[in-house]
Length: 92
Image 1 (tube, helix red, strand yellow):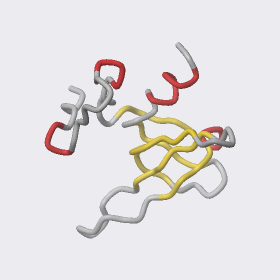
Image 2 (spheres, rainbow, N blue to C red):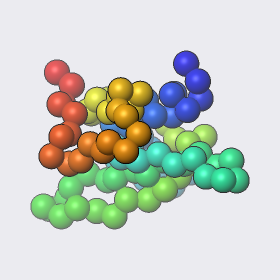
Image 3 (cartoon, rainbow, N blue to C red):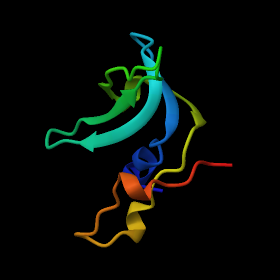
């Protein structure tokens, strides 16, 4: 499995930043032009309110259990897009 595939597999995992202890679920990953690989962590809902997510270098993350399956991007044709209406089913 390539580094890109391993990083995409992080989508839907619980994670915590080793430095700040910010925690939540990895909801997005990014590969930038300068070689940085980052993941957006979305915190859990508290008191009925969505918290603000933050980006962290993947090397700083402690990974936890899977909350939902990640989309299979290798099965999607270029130009096709899966949106919120077509979320992957939760893992049973």
